[in-house]
Figure 1 (cartoon, helix red, strand yellow):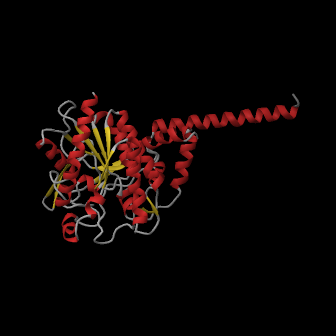
Figure 2 (cartoon, rainbow, N blue to C red; figure 1 turned 180 degrees about the vertical axis):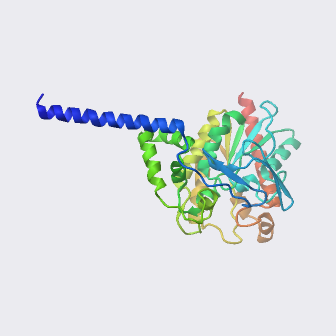
Figure 3 (cartoon, rainbow, N blue to C red; figure 1 turned 120 degrees about the horizontal axis):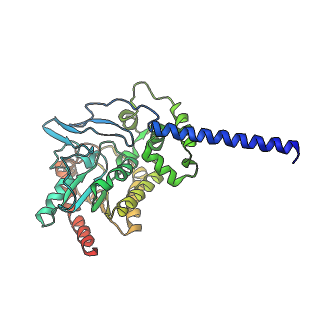
Length: 352
Protein backbone atom coordinates (compact mmCIF):
# COMPACT_ATOMS: atom_id res chain seq x y z
CA UNK A 1 0.00 0.00 0.00
CA UNK A 2 1.37 3.37 -0.97
CA UNK A 3 1.90 6.08 1.71
CA UNK A 4 -0.91 8.15 0.14
CA UNK A 5 -3.43 5.31 0.32
CA UNK A 6 -2.29 4.53 3.88
CA UNK A 7 -2.93 8.15 4.92
CA UNK A 8 -6.37 8.08 3.27
CA UNK A 9 -7.21 4.82 5.06
CA UNK A 10 -6.13 6.18 8.45
CA UNK A 11 -8.10 9.40 7.79
CA UNK A 12 -11.23 7.40 6.93
CA UNK A 13 -10.82 5.28 10.06
CA UNK A 14 -10.39 8.44 12.16
CA UNK A 15 -13.54 10.02 10.67
CA UNK A 16 -15.57 6.86 11.23
CA UNK A 17 -14.24 6.62 14.78
CA UNK A 18 -15.20 10.23 15.47
CA UNK A 19 -18.69 9.67 14.07
CA UNK A 20 -19.05 6.54 16.21
CA UNK A 21 -18.07 8.47 19.33
CA UNK A 22 -20.51 11.25 18.45
CA UNK A 23 -23.28 8.67 17.89
CA UNK A 24 -22.57 7.03 21.25
CA UNK A 25 -22.54 10.47 22.87
CA UNK A 26 -25.88 11.35 21.30
CA UNK A 27 -27.38 8.09 22.54
CA UNK A 28 -26.05 8.80 26.04
CA UNK A 29 -27.67 12.25 25.97
CA UNK A 30 -30.97 10.70 24.98
CA UNK A 31 -30.69 8.09 27.73
CA UNK A 32 -29.99 10.75 30.34
CA UNK A 33 -32.49 13.32 29.07
CA UNK A 34 -35.04 12.11 26.51
CA UNK A 35 -36.54 15.61 26.52
CA UNK A 36 -34.15 17.83 24.58
CA UNK A 37 -36.14 21.01 25.14
CA UNK A 38 -38.27 22.53 27.87
CA UNK A 39 -41.87 23.05 26.87
CA UNK A 40 -43.91 26.07 27.80
CA UNK A 41 -45.88 26.27 31.06
CA UNK A 42 -49.51 25.32 31.39
CA UNK A 43 -52.20 27.65 30.09
CA UNK A 44 -55.43 28.16 31.98
CA UNK A 45 -58.85 29.19 30.74
CA UNK A 46 -58.62 27.58 27.30
CA UNK A 47 -62.25 26.56 27.26
CA UNK A 48 -65.10 25.51 29.52
CA UNK A 49 -63.45 23.51 32.29
CA UNK A 50 -60.41 22.69 30.13
CA UNK A 51 -56.85 22.82 31.44
CA UNK A 52 -53.75 21.48 29.66
CA UNK A 53 -50.27 20.57 30.83
CA UNK A 54 -47.03 19.64 29.04
CA UNK A 55 -46.47 15.99 28.16
CA UNK A 56 -43.03 14.66 27.17
CA UNK A 57 -44.37 12.39 24.41
CA UNK A 58 -47.63 14.04 23.29
CA UNK A 59 -46.62 17.76 23.57
CA UNK A 60 -49.56 18.39 25.92
CA UNK A 61 -52.48 16.57 27.51
CA UNK A 62 -55.55 17.31 29.63
CA UNK A 63 -54.51 18.06 33.19
CA UNK A 64 -55.78 15.45 35.70
CA UNK A 65 -58.26 16.70 38.27
CA UNK A 66 -61.74 18.15 38.52
CA UNK A 67 -62.76 21.65 37.45
CA UNK A 68 -66.02 23.50 36.90
CA UNK A 69 -66.88 26.24 34.43
CA UNK A 70 -70.25 27.58 33.29
CA UNK A 71 -72.08 24.87 35.29
CA UNK A 72 -70.05 22.16 33.53
CA UNK A 73 -67.93 19.86 35.65
CA UNK A 74 -64.95 18.32 33.91
CA UNK A 75 -63.17 15.36 35.45
CA UNK A 76 -59.87 14.14 33.98
CA UNK A 77 -58.26 10.94 35.26
CA UNK A 78 -54.58 10.21 35.81
CA UNK A 79 -54.22 9.01 32.20
CA UNK A 80 -55.20 12.47 30.93
CA UNK A 81 -58.60 11.23 29.70
CA UNK A 82 -61.97 12.78 30.47
CA UNK A 83 -63.84 10.69 33.02
CA UNK A 84 -63.13 8.90 36.27
CA UNK A 85 -61.02 5.88 37.13
CA UNK A 86 -61.01 3.30 34.34
CA UNK A 87 -62.37 -0.08 35.49
CA UNK A 88 -60.19 -3.14 34.90
CA UNK A 89 -60.60 -5.17 31.71
CA UNK A 90 -63.25 -7.88 31.70
CA UNK A 91 -66.10 -5.83 33.14
CA UNK A 92 -67.64 -5.17 29.71
CA UNK A 93 -66.43 -4.51 26.14
CA UNK A 94 -64.30 -1.37 26.04
CA UNK A 95 -64.70 1.36 23.42
CA UNK A 96 -61.91 3.94 23.09
CA UNK A 97 -62.57 7.29 21.37
CA UNK A 98 -59.74 9.28 19.76
CA UNK A 99 -59.91 12.87 18.55
CA UNK A 100 -59.96 16.49 19.65
CA UNK A 101 -62.29 18.78 21.60
CA UNK A 102 -65.41 17.65 19.71
CA UNK A 103 -64.78 14.13 21.07
CA UNK A 104 -63.74 15.41 24.51
CA UNK A 105 -67.10 17.18 24.74
CA UNK A 106 -66.24 20.89 24.57
CA UNK A 107 -68.87 22.91 26.40
CA UNK A 108 -71.11 19.96 27.34
CA UNK A 109 -71.29 17.71 30.38
CA UNK A 110 -69.65 14.31 30.38
CA UNK A 111 -72.97 12.50 30.04
CA UNK A 112 -73.99 14.73 27.10
CA UNK A 113 -70.78 14.08 25.14
CA UNK A 114 -71.37 11.50 22.41
CA UNK A 115 -68.90 8.88 23.72
CA UNK A 116 -71.00 8.41 26.89
CA UNK A 117 -74.30 9.06 25.12
CA UNK A 118 -73.41 6.24 22.72
CA UNK A 119 -72.54 3.99 25.64
CA UNK A 120 -75.93 4.63 27.29
CA UNK A 121 -77.77 3.74 24.09
CA UNK A 122 -75.84 0.49 23.83
CA UNK A 123 -76.59 -0.28 27.48
CA UNK A 124 -80.32 0.27 26.96
CA UNK A 125 -80.15 -2.17 24.04
CA UNK A 126 -78.55 -4.84 26.20
CA UNK A 127 -74.93 -4.21 25.14
CA UNK A 128 -73.20 -2.47 28.08
CA UNK A 129 -69.74 -1.01 27.33
CA UNK A 130 -66.96 0.80 29.15
CA UNK A 131 -66.39 4.25 27.61
CA UNK A 132 -62.74 5.35 27.26
CA UNK A 133 -62.78 8.97 26.08
CA UNK A 134 -59.24 9.89 25.03
CA UNK A 135 -60.44 12.92 23.03
CA UNK A 136 -58.26 15.89 23.97
CA UNK A 137 -58.76 19.57 23.04
CA UNK A 138 -56.35 20.52 20.27
CA UNK A 139 -55.19 16.99 19.51
CA UNK A 140 -54.08 16.27 15.96
CA UNK A 141 -54.04 12.84 14.37
CA UNK A 142 -50.34 12.56 15.26
CA UNK A 143 -51.04 13.15 18.95
CA UNK A 144 -53.95 10.70 18.97
CA UNK A 145 -51.74 8.17 17.17
CA UNK A 146 -49.01 8.36 19.82
CA UNK A 147 -51.63 8.48 22.58
CA UNK A 148 -53.06 5.16 21.38
CA UNK A 149 -49.59 3.64 21.17
CA UNK A 150 -48.84 4.88 24.69
CA UNK A 151 -52.10 3.84 26.40
CA UNK A 152 -53.38 1.00 24.22
CA UNK A 153 -51.99 -1.94 26.18
CA UNK A 154 -53.11 -0.44 29.49
CA UNK A 155 -56.64 0.32 28.29
CA UNK A 156 -57.08 -2.87 26.20
CA UNK A 157 -59.92 -1.55 24.00
CA UNK A 158 -62.19 -3.85 22.02
CA UNK A 159 -63.14 -1.08 19.56
CA UNK A 160 -61.29 2.15 18.72
CA UNK A 161 -63.33 5.02 17.26
CA UNK A 162 -61.01 7.29 15.23
CA UNK A 163 -62.35 10.84 14.73
CA UNK A 164 -59.24 12.94 14.07
CA UNK A 165 -60.04 15.83 11.71
CA UNK A 166 -60.28 19.48 12.73
CA UNK A 167 -56.95 20.02 14.48
CA UNK A 168 -55.01 18.65 11.51
CA UNK A 169 -56.46 21.35 9.24
CA UNK A 170 -55.68 24.27 11.56
CA UNK A 171 -53.14 26.67 10.10
CA UNK A 172 -50.14 27.60 12.23
CA UNK A 173 -46.49 28.41 11.80
CA UNK A 174 -45.50 24.81 12.56
CA UNK A 175 -46.18 21.33 11.29
CA UNK A 176 -46.90 18.88 14.09
CA UNK A 177 -44.02 16.67 13.05
CA UNK A 178 -41.67 19.67 13.47
CA UNK A 179 -42.92 20.26 17.02
CA UNK A 180 -42.41 16.58 17.89
CA UNK A 181 -38.88 16.70 16.52
CA UNK A 182 -38.13 20.01 18.24
CA UNK A 183 -39.13 18.63 21.63
CA UNK A 184 -37.59 15.22 21.15
CA UNK A 185 -40.75 13.18 21.75
CA UNK A 186 -39.69 9.54 22.34
CA UNK A 187 -42.91 8.30 20.74
CA UNK A 188 -42.28 10.33 17.59
CA UNK A 189 -38.63 9.22 17.48
CA UNK A 190 -39.75 5.60 17.61
CA UNK A 191 -42.21 6.18 14.76
CA UNK A 192 -39.48 7.82 12.70
CA UNK A 193 -37.16 4.88 13.24
CA UNK A 194 -39.77 2.64 11.71
CA UNK A 195 -40.05 4.89 8.64
CA UNK A 196 -36.64 6.47 8.03
CA UNK A 197 -33.24 4.78 7.93
CA UNK A 198 -31.40 7.90 9.11
CA UNK A 199 -33.79 8.29 12.06
CA UNK A 200 -32.24 5.19 13.63
CA UNK A 201 -29.20 7.38 14.33
CA UNK A 202 -29.43 9.27 17.62
CA UNK A 203 -26.89 11.76 16.25
CA UNK A 204 -29.07 12.53 13.23
CA UNK A 205 -32.19 12.95 15.38
CA UNK A 206 -30.29 15.18 17.80
CA UNK A 207 -28.90 17.41 15.05
CA UNK A 208 -32.29 17.71 13.34
CA UNK A 209 -33.95 18.70 16.61
CA UNK A 210 -31.21 21.24 17.35
CA UNK A 211 -31.61 22.83 13.92
CA UNK A 212 -35.35 23.13 14.49
CA UNK A 213 -34.70 24.73 17.87
CA UNK A 214 -32.98 27.63 16.10
CA UNK A 215 -36.28 28.60 14.52
CA UNK A 216 -37.68 31.49 16.58
CA UNK A 217 -41.03 31.29 18.34
CA UNK A 218 -43.01 34.55 18.64
CA UNK A 219 -42.60 36.01 22.12
CA UNK A 220 -46.36 36.25 22.61
CA UNK A 221 -46.90 32.53 21.96
CA UNK A 222 -46.34 29.43 24.03
CA UNK A 223 -45.06 26.42 22.13
CA UNK A 224 -47.96 24.24 23.18
CA UNK A 225 -51.45 25.59 22.87
CA UNK A 226 -51.01 29.04 21.32
CA UNK A 227 -48.48 28.03 18.71
CA UNK A 228 -50.51 24.99 17.73
CA UNK A 229 -53.96 26.56 17.85
CA UNK A 230 -53.31 30.28 17.71
CA UNK A 231 -52.48 30.60 14.02
CA UNK A 232 -54.83 32.68 11.90
CA UNK A 233 -56.81 30.98 9.17
CA UNK A 234 -55.13 31.28 5.82
CA UNK A 235 -51.73 31.94 7.39
CA UNK A 236 -48.95 29.41 7.72
CA UNK A 237 -49.18 25.68 7.12
CA UNK A 238 -51.76 23.17 8.23
CA UNK A 239 -50.68 21.23 11.30
CA UNK A 240 -50.71 18.05 9.19
CA UNK A 241 -50.76 17.65 5.44
CA UNK A 242 -53.49 15.44 4.02
CA UNK A 243 -50.80 12.81 3.37
CA UNK A 244 -49.58 12.95 6.99
CA UNK A 245 -53.18 12.76 8.21
CA UNK A 246 -53.79 9.63 6.15
CA UNK A 247 -50.58 8.01 7.40
CA UNK A 248 -51.63 8.71 10.99
CA UNK A 249 -55.09 7.21 10.43
CA UNK A 250 -53.48 4.09 8.99
CA UNK A 251 -51.08 3.89 11.93
CA UNK A 252 -53.95 4.20 14.42
CA UNK A 253 -55.84 1.41 12.66
CA UNK A 254 -52.67 -0.73 12.64
CA UNK A 255 -52.19 -0.18 16.38
CA UNK A 256 -55.85 -0.92 17.13
CA UNK A 257 -55.67 -4.18 15.19
CA UNK A 258 -52.39 -5.15 16.89
CA UNK A 259 -54.23 -4.76 20.22
CA UNK A 260 -57.00 -7.05 18.99
CA UNK A 261 -59.44 -4.14 18.62
CA UNK A 262 -61.69 -3.22 15.69
CA UNK A 263 -61.23 0.33 14.28
CA UNK A 264 -64.25 2.46 13.35
CA UNK A 265 -63.83 5.78 11.55
CA UNK A 266 -65.99 8.79 12.38
CA UNK A 267 -66.21 11.90 10.15
CA UNK A 268 -67.26 14.83 12.32
CA UNK A 269 -69.74 17.36 10.84
CA UNK A 270 -68.79 20.80 9.53
CA UNK A 271 -70.91 23.84 10.41
CA UNK A 272 -72.03 25.16 7.03
CA UNK A 273 -74.18 27.91 8.52
CA UNK A 274 -71.17 30.14 9.03
CA UNK A 275 -67.47 30.21 8.28
CA UNK A 276 -66.04 26.77 7.67
CA UNK A 277 -63.19 25.21 5.70
CA UNK A 278 -63.96 25.20 1.96
CA UNK A 279 -64.56 21.77 0.48
CA UNK A 280 -61.26 21.78 -1.38
CA UNK A 281 -59.54 21.92 2.03
CA UNK A 282 -61.97 19.71 3.93
CA UNK A 283 -62.62 16.88 1.47
CA UNK A 284 -59.11 15.38 1.31
CA UNK A 285 -59.16 14.86 5.08
CA UNK A 286 -62.68 13.43 5.02
CA UNK A 287 -61.74 11.18 2.09
CA UNK A 288 -58.83 9.84 4.13
CA UNK A 289 -61.33 8.45 6.65
CA UNK A 290 -63.48 6.91 3.95
CA UNK A 291 -60.61 5.40 1.98
CA UNK A 292 -58.61 4.05 4.93
CA UNK A 293 -61.79 2.47 6.31
CA UNK A 294 -62.70 0.94 2.93
CA UNK A 295 -59.21 -0.48 2.43
CA UNK A 296 -59.47 -2.32 5.76
CA UNK A 297 -63.12 -3.33 5.56
CA UNK A 298 -63.81 -1.11 8.57
CA UNK A 299 -67.00 0.89 9.09
CA UNK A 300 -67.07 4.65 8.60
CA UNK A 301 -69.79 6.85 10.13
CA UNK A 302 -70.11 10.02 8.02
CA UNK A 303 -71.80 12.63 10.22
CA UNK A 304 -71.04 15.47 7.79
CA UNK A 305 -73.12 13.88 5.03
CA UNK A 306 -75.86 13.01 7.55
CA UNK A 307 -76.09 16.59 8.84
CA UNK A 308 -76.16 18.13 5.37
CA UNK A 309 -79.62 16.64 4.96
CA UNK A 310 -81.04 18.85 7.73
CA UNK A 311 -82.25 22.44 7.49
CA UNK A 312 -80.66 25.54 8.95
CA UNK A 313 -83.01 25.61 11.95
CA UNK A 314 -81.87 22.15 13.05
CA UNK A 315 -78.18 22.81 12.41
CA UNK A 316 -78.30 26.05 14.38
CA UNK A 317 -79.36 23.99 17.40
CA UNK A 318 -76.87 21.19 16.79
CA UNK A 319 -73.76 23.40 16.72
CA UNK A 320 -72.39 25.54 19.53
CA UNK A 321 -69.90 27.32 17.28
CA UNK A 322 -67.88 26.71 14.14
CA UNK A 323 -67.06 23.05 14.85
CA UNK A 324 -68.28 21.95 18.28
CA UNK A 325 -71.61 20.08 18.52
CA UNK A 326 -74.15 21.16 21.12
CA UNK A 327 -75.74 18.67 23.50
CA UNK A 328 -78.41 18.01 20.84
CA UNK A 329 -75.69 17.52 18.23
CA UNK A 330 -73.85 15.04 20.44
CA UNK A 331 -77.11 13.14 20.90
CA UNK A 332 -77.55 12.76 17.14
CA UNK A 333 -73.97 11.56 16.72
CA UNK A 334 -74.67 8.95 19.41
CA UNK A 335 -77.85 7.89 17.59
CA UNK A 336 -75.83 7.27 14.41
CA UNK A 337 -72.84 5.65 16.09
CA UNK A 338 -74.59 3.28 18.52
CA UNK A 339 -75.90 0.75 15.93
CA UNK A 340 -72.53 0.71 14.15
CA UNK A 341 -70.77 -0.03 17.43
CA UNK A 342 -73.31 -2.72 18.28
CA UNK A 343 -72.70 -4.37 14.89
CA UNK A 344 -68.92 -4.23 15.33
CA UNK A 345 -69.02 -5.61 18.86
CA UNK A 346 -71.32 -8.41 17.68
CA UNK A 347 -68.96 -9.32 14.84
CA UNK A 348 -65.98 -9.25 17.16
CA UNK A 349 -67.71 -11.53 19.66
CA UNK A 350 -68.69 -13.95 16.85
CA UNK A 351 -65.07 -14.14 15.65
CA UNK A 352 -63.84 -15.28 19.04
